[in-house]
Length: 124
Image (cartoon, rainbow, N blue to C red):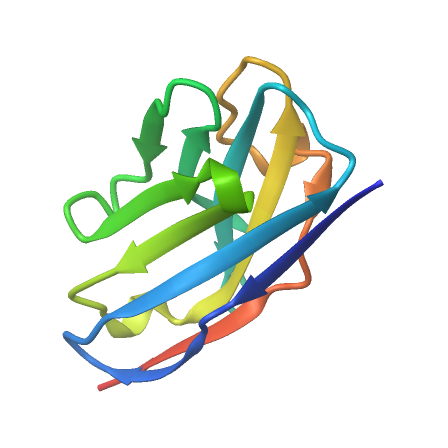
């Protein structure tokens, strides 16, 4: 079993920054993808960013490129999402997810383990 716990969400003004954290515990894997997704009210869950635990390869949604940065601390089994220049449309519940293996998926259906989510609200 794998547990993921997100933290760092909150209320921020437009143009502000937040850093989300996701701690992965339980069963471990030598290689896996660590992804961030978000879901706004009335919308489908959408891909934000992904990082491979081994090698550090990353990918971002076009909507967050240049503003968000995904990173990891393997010693702490933690993945981060640094969010800068936040916009009202970034308001959503943010989820981290893990998929064991070597592929770098961007679809939520490809992920096996999910956290409970953390709310991010960007006020105008």
